[in-house]
Amino acid sequence: MKIVYMCSRYLPHFKGGTESLTHLLAKGMQDRGHTVRVACVESTESGEDSEIRGCDDVFDDVSVHRISYRWSAQNAPFKRLTANPKIEEYLEHWLERERPDCVHVMNCFRITSAALTAPRRLGIPLAMTLTEYWFLCPIGSLFNVAGQICPGAEQVQVEDCLTCFVGLGGTLKRIPLGRHLSPRPLAWILALMDRGNVSRQWVPARFAGCTQGLEERQELLRELRKSVEVFLTLNDLEKQFYVEHGFDGNRIRTIIPTVAAVNPSAFQKSPRQGQLRVGFIGAMVRYKGIETLVDGFRLSGLGERASLHLWGDDQSDKDYRARLLRHMNGAANIHLHGRFDEGKLDEVFAGIDLLVIPSLTLETGPLVLFEAFARHTPSLCSNLGGMVQFVRHQENGFLFKPGDAADCARVLREIDADESLFEHVRERARLPQSYEEFLSEHESIYGQLTRAVVQRKGATR
Image (cartoon, rainbow, N blue to C red; front, side, top):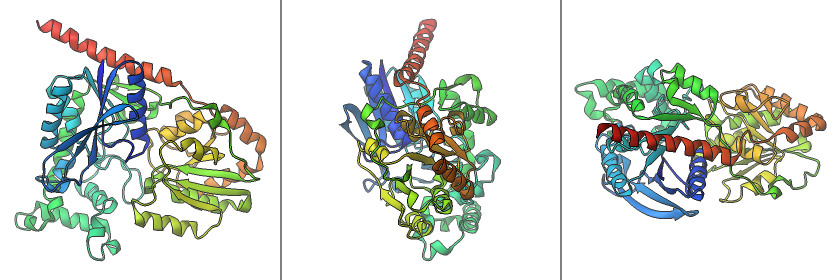
């Protein structure tokens, strides 16, 4: 088979759970003898005009087609966040040349709905892994500016979604003294202006048509989800969540994620030197709950018996970095390491004894949990979302109340005080399924999709 994977971003310049999962599948399917291509967005700030450009390269033996464009130069850029006719036309021509047997979409955020519409216009069977909440939330996280889990765009006002765009994007940073403004009043003013016959001309270009765009988005996505033959979720709770939001459960299949087999040397830890080494590995964004972890670690009072190591890109958002540093308050046993190079994950895990995933929103994975399982490293996770399906408290991991620094501190003290409990958990921290099983499940789905197309064509002759 020839398989095209579509991903908003891709390695090596962008590294996260979705990017790693995409590469895991692409590499695995290629090793099984299939022809694989990855299409991704390399930049939304490239060029001076609205044209879509692409180039080919190879990453880790996988062929990659990287698309670049300037989002702000697009006609009605706010609407182009969801549907972009230029990208759709570009992808349709590219897919006509590639002629894949099926397309697997990993996410849509920057590649837009074109990732779904272009294959469908060509009659190419389509699968999509729901790695983010793009169908339910314009920013994909279901985490709003108030620090709460949002019920989804269909259950809130347009102004609420616009508040998240203003507050969680870079809008306030572009306005003089913007950091001192509240995003909600500004969003409501933008919405009022955008709806007015006279005031609409004063709306900043990047927000032109924002209210209509958000209103049309829901209807568009309800139609788009009908075009996907099979949706894949990473846990059963995520599947249930989507069914509750109107998705057809018969077209959703759960495939538990995993990671490639690691070298046995990855199980060896560097010397602890009498410390419990606690680690965070992931995106440095607010909904990951890193402040809760930092506060919980400080509240634990473990002192020199423990150290906290934070790994992730801490340079993309300088304001958030400053916020983290304030929470750290100069503590000598908390270390902000920043981003690590590709291929250094084993080395990072070798330096921690306990991985903490303190997320404040509904994680669809996260893949780093399975990286920890693969290396027999216990995890302490917030008792939220899909992680609950895989982590059993004091059996193969630990759980604490989401956003509760005091509860996080309590569990850290319990772990530090009971070495036998920690060893019990470490012995049971194992992957729920193998890499080969994971690949076989996907391979089976691709086969079903392509056979269905052949049968349909035969029936119409």
